[in-house]
Length: 398
Image (tube, rainbow, N blue to C red; front, side, top):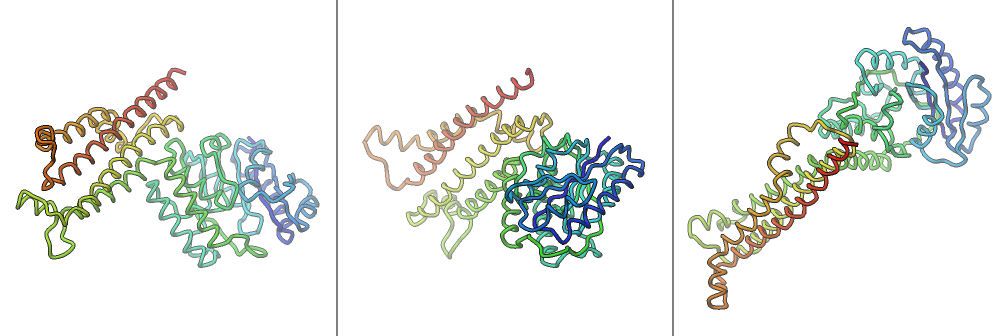
């Protein structure tokens, strides 16, 4: 079995020789560690460096050097290294001297013992030499990823990890920038077919100046985490948003903002709604319609994601939503249209008899419009749901 170590480097002339020599020395120990490795290759990707990184890297015998003519980014360099690698297992570490190549032994041992597809070296421990500001940032990102993926990770942006080459297909596509590692972490956490684990690793201060921008790359990390959450777990993302909108709508209809009563309690007591309540009712109907739309969007998108990811084992939450909503869009649509008609039956009768609608009952057409609009949305999503089920059936037969 071959293990490939990929080292991305950009303007690291002061550190590149040392990290290559340490990686080559670790290669011999990796082969003797009883991990079943027949060969360990070391690949350095010079990502368009403008200093002497490439020249000094080529002075180290035994390492393969691949060049980018221009700087393409941290993630792009790792992907180029993966493309040039021959290993069934792939690993990468930073070229700045913060990580110890010998720790690959621990990562591979963990992956073999626990049957992992991805094993990560975690820097989040008391003896880590990570700068304080980056510790805070990593804590925030790991908390978000753990909430989204239901995991218990401690470091989602570690620059040292190993993975099966066969897992890359399920992790792709990955970005080209510094957000490569958090993107890999969140996708592995959200993919039920991949198993990821981590172990604390030694982490030292880097050689030279860091190229990570806390603010710029922090926003990129946040962006890729949220983007992956939307594309892998749309039902959770849009369902949460729908729940928030529904709560605000219910609160606006049932709670007092001032000394005056709220619309629903007032109607239950007096069997009418005052004109001054119109803006609150309109506000609530817009929120409720949006909540219905987001729920249907999340359910339909989740079905498409399941087809793309070839995920035939839905979660209990998705099974519940499928049973209640996804497979019953058309009945729900019919219910909304029927409810709108029943609610406005007296007004419609009055209109056909007299040509006028009593203005005292303005709330009924408003709520009826909400129900009719929701019925149209459910009708459209019912068609989309039918298409996704046909695609899923075709995939199972192909």
